[in-house]
Length: 224
Image 1 (cartoon, rainbow, N blue to C red):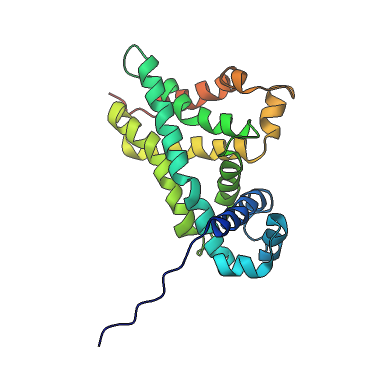
Image 2 (image 1 turned 90 degrees about the vertical axis):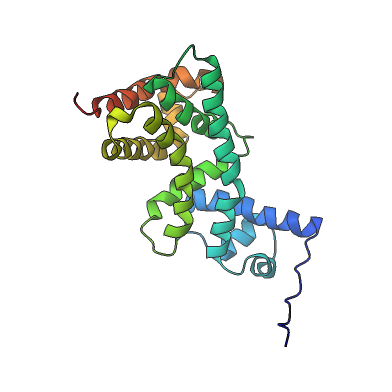
């Protein structure tokens, strides 16, 4: 006997718009209140939709988080990859450690410093949620963000094998930990630039941190 097929879920422009409203609201709330501090009711109110629509589109908060993280993960990967491609094009030869760190970090800082950037709320959300990484139900979802780290890790493995994998992973972890703090709250960049930072000046503002990260990686090289 043939297995009965489930009816295909129909998608409409209105349904997609509602879904995106819910995910937009989730980005903001997860980024400001965290996962545990955000309820489905909070999300419905922020999105301006009925609770029934939240349940219809996602079912529960766990599914909302998964969808919110997946929605712009590809865009973030593309943005970081494009930053490396641009750095490679400008460089006369192989990128040095500071240039690699800069290519990885600046897109994050640009996004959180620009209100209209489509990645702004997403980056703040994912940075805030990393503090909840130990929650068993969130670990598989947040683990998907490792594909972003791998862009930097793969580049370093190819061009700086002398660092050694164990030291390299430790160094990247520390860079990411600092980056998470830097982008969780734009107040860091405001203070760093005396409350008048601009996207155009970000590289100059962040240069001490970028040099610090690069020097840290340099110090982890295996002795010859």
